[in-house]
Image (tube, rainbow, N blue to C red; front, side):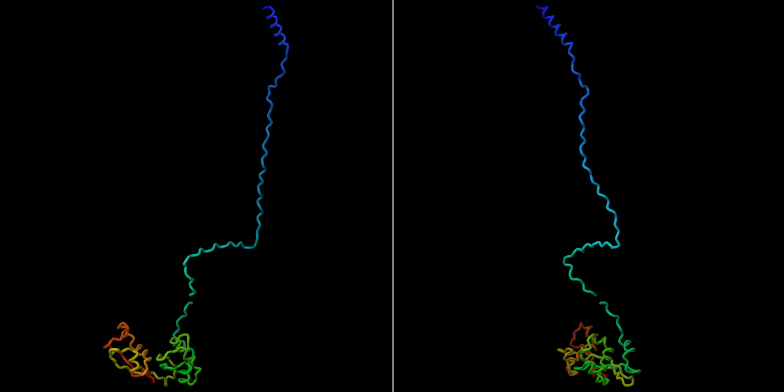
Length: 225
C-alpha cells in the first residue's frame, strides 16, 4: 500500500514539472496621465493712449453747509474820499472873482430855490447853494432844516460877516432849551441854536440843564439879519 502511494506522488510531481507557466508581465501597466485642462486666462490688452486738445474739467467738491451760518454779508460800498467843500467851490461854481462867505440862517419855509431867488434873483442858482453846502445838507437837496446855517458866496465888499453877540442867562427851575427859545426868540424850534452855542457846557453837565447853571443866549438869532 505504501508503495502505491509513493508511486502516485512521484507520478504527480513529474506531471506537474512538465507544465509551463504563463509569462508574467513584470512591468506595471502605465497609467495614462491626463493633464487637466487649464482655462485660458485672457489678459486685456492695454488701450492705446489718446490725446485731445480739450481740457479735462475736474468737478469741484461742494463746500460743506454750515448750519446757522447766518445770511451772507452783504456786499461792503467803499466810501468816497472826503472833499472839503470850500476847496471844491474854488474851482466851480464861482459867482464872483473876489468873494467872501456869508452865513445865511435857514428860515421856516425855506427851500434851496427860494433862497437862491431871494439872495441872487435867480432860483436856478439853487444848484450852486447845494454844491457849496453839500456836506451840511447831505444827498437830498430837498431836505433842509430851519435854524441851520448855509455858506453863501457874495461879493467881498457886500458880504455880511457879522459874528453873533451873546448875553449870560441863568437857568431857572422848569427851564429847558425849548421854552427858553420860545420866550427869547418867539419860536421854540430855534432851540437848536441854543444847543449849538452851549454844547460844551451842556455836555459837561451830563447833557442836563440844571437850575442855576449859566448859558449864553444870542442877542439876535441871525447876526446878519
